[in-house]
Length: 260
View: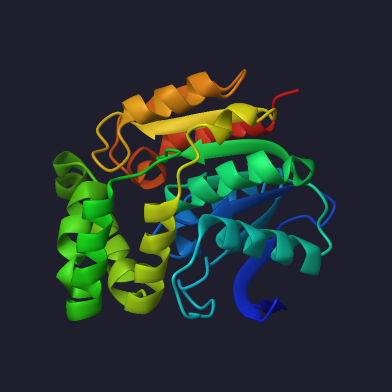
C-alpha cells in the first residue's frame, strides 16, 4: 500500500475503486488500523472510490512525538485529501475516527459531502479513565490494556459466536505503537466538542451500538439531537459495531451514502 507525506507526516493509505466514482473516506478507531474496515470495503467499492488510512500513531503511519489533538488528527486527513487532489468526500469514522469526523464537520464543512459518525461522542470518557490507560500503556505496553479493551469492543455473545473476529482485532490492538496509542488517548481525553457539534450543517448519520460501554448509545442520541437533521441508527452491538453487526451496518451506511 502507498504512503503520502503531508506536513512532515508519512501517512499509510489505500485508495481503491473506480477513479471516477465519489470518494468515501474511512477513519479507524483507537488501537486499530484501516484493516478494521475490511468487511465494508467490498460493499463500498461497488459504488464509491474508497480511501482508507492509518491514523497518526497507528498501523504503518508514522508515530510522531505526542501528545496529539483531535484537530491535529483531522488536519492530517485534510493534508491527505490535498495530497491526493481530492476536493470533497464522504466521511465515515468510528470512535476516535468519529471525533475526527466531528471536527471536520465543524471546521471544514466545504470538504465533506456527507458525514457518518459511528460509536462516538463529542466527549468520550473521563480524565481519570484516560490518564489511567495512558499510564498503564506507557508502563506495560499494549498488553497491559489489550484484553480489557477488546472485552469492551464486543459483546460476550459475539466473542463466543465469532472468536476469530475478536482475536483479529486483539492482534491489531497488540500491534499498535504504545506511544502512538497513548498520544491518541491524550487527543481523545482533551477533546470536548459538545457545544460545537450543534454548528454542523451537513447531512449526518449517527450509528451507535446499543450495548456499547465505551460510547453509550445515550451519548449518540444526544449528539444526533444536537446536530440539525441528523439521522440516528442503533445497532445490536457493542463498540466495534461495523464488525459485530456487519450486515445491518453496511446496509445503513450504503442507504445513507447513496440517498438522493
